[in-house]
Length: 107
Image (cartoon, rainbow, N blue to C red; front, side, top):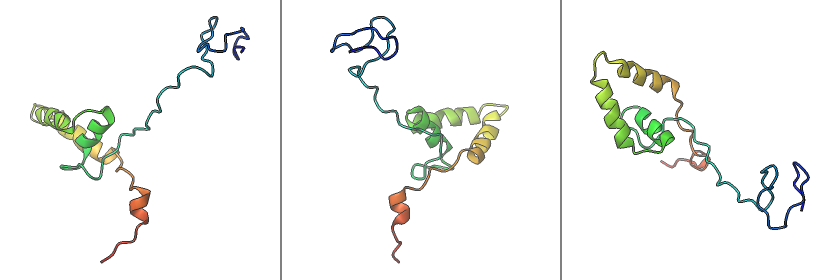
């Protein structure tokens, strides 16, 4: 096997090139990264879903983000209130799942 970047001959079991460090086909693949976007969820809202969206984006507990938000909202000169309103306006809603949107609603 040869390195596709520098042309060095490698063992068939090599994971990386010993000269340039390039991964070979034997190299472990990184785990698939989820495409996390900063959105307001439709299911875990208390007021507008801003704290739940931030918590989901940062992969932390929403209760922690809500407690921090309340503390910041109560701290003068109250810039967190304006930041929350701006986030409410700027953060898009989470997209509706395709399977749910395609199902007809029965009355």
